Length: 478
Ligand code: BG6
Image (spheres, rainbow, N blue to C red):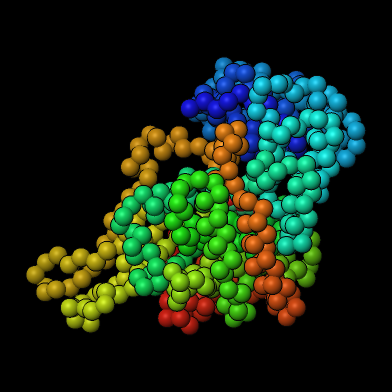
């Protein structure tokens, strides 16, 4: 379904995110007919370009980041006609009057702040002073949204000077992933799972986001961030919320975000012995974390595992184990919900019983799998075996699976539609930092060093112990 006509201004239009995600994503939405003929994209950056040279840059980005079979010369040419450029000085006066002159009446105005957070205030103020943004305009901001509670509050305050909460779209691209949204469909559109979705029946939950990439080339950013700020405070927290939250009364932005906020507020502080931090060693033809960092004594974690407790009625006694890291064995993200034993077994101890596990695979090979027990076929008596009820979305959806929009495409279209469900509200971000800050402060005060782990492994030894101590095991990363 086409969205309303828009003028989308991308600050940082020549930057990496614009080239990799935003512009190729918009091209794909144009190709799909969702971005209509009378919509326009305006790149805004410091570089001294004009419409033509910026269009050339966008063309190159499409060539590099859109799969070849989706590149159609005619459609690319039509798309590029929708693109303009303004050279702008984010902290000065240059370019703002020109941008003002480019804005049209009667279309949705959106401003994407794909720039360093330190520029948010300056840009918001200039949009306001130059009367470029109106009361219906939307602004889109990227992570990192602060690096602690104080800085997140300061960013919220700076934006709130000129924009209402209903105008602010804070991106967490995990919420734009099809499979992440699917979590809500699985939980709330089926009767099967929800009655069992509580401590009484769930033994524990594992959330894994494993990556194979290193931080080479992003060392300067990553060193100030680490896995906790880069992945846990935002993406993993969102996954945890979608799994743990109560059913919202309606699939409506504030109803959903209210429920997520309650989960974040219910998180207990994490005990030091329930935190394992790791840093990758050299190996597999690549340098160690330290070699990729600018600080030879860096204690930044490229891996973290946590045992988290959601202190509310529903989850009392069910631990949530979270882990994420770089340079691990495989790129694999999943959520696994392990159920408890039946209250009474009619079978022998040696029958081979194992738990039911619901696995939601987020990437790659998106799908769901439910491990159930059946009788081992054959005449050998009542032996049990575990088999998967497996649903691969690619197999179930056929060709449609190829057309699933990338997270950014989906989220940008939601901005134009004015739907905030998949964006973080200011109070949500602040609550997430309020939980994160003491953990980080704790290990900094203790001077904890991350444990080394080998590239291609499943993380540091201590992370295995975190589970073993509880008589549980991490699922294999594969
Ligand atoms: C980003 C992090 O937000 O998410 C990166 O900054 C990480 O460090 C990336 O690699 C993971 O995203 P995805 O979509 O590849 O799982």
